[in-house]
Image (cartoon, rainbow, N blue to C red; front, side, top):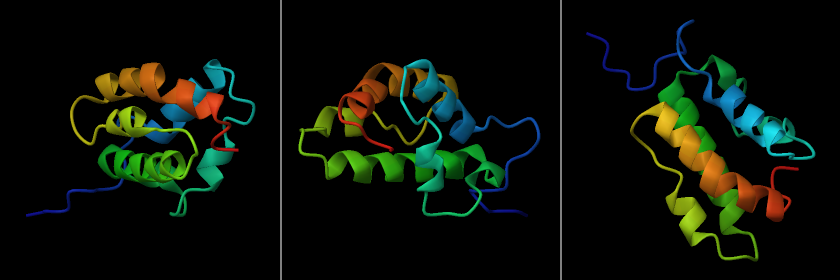
Length: 106
């Protein structure tokens, strides 16, 4: 029995790293790929979506947490469970504007 809650990404799994990068690009972020290079893990694209979401949320929580602007609401929008479609929509609407406004992920 495999009890690993974070298996590697299967070919048909969503790639949340790619999805977030695409959202940043579509929103006009000047360097939408830079944040990927700053992740604390090597090659996060090979990881399953649950672990990708964990790493993505940790990265952005730290970045926003050390920002001079209050980011409490935006950090609460980095949900750790639920449908990936909902996660990405919440990220797009609530988190990306803060990232761009504060020049994060450069």
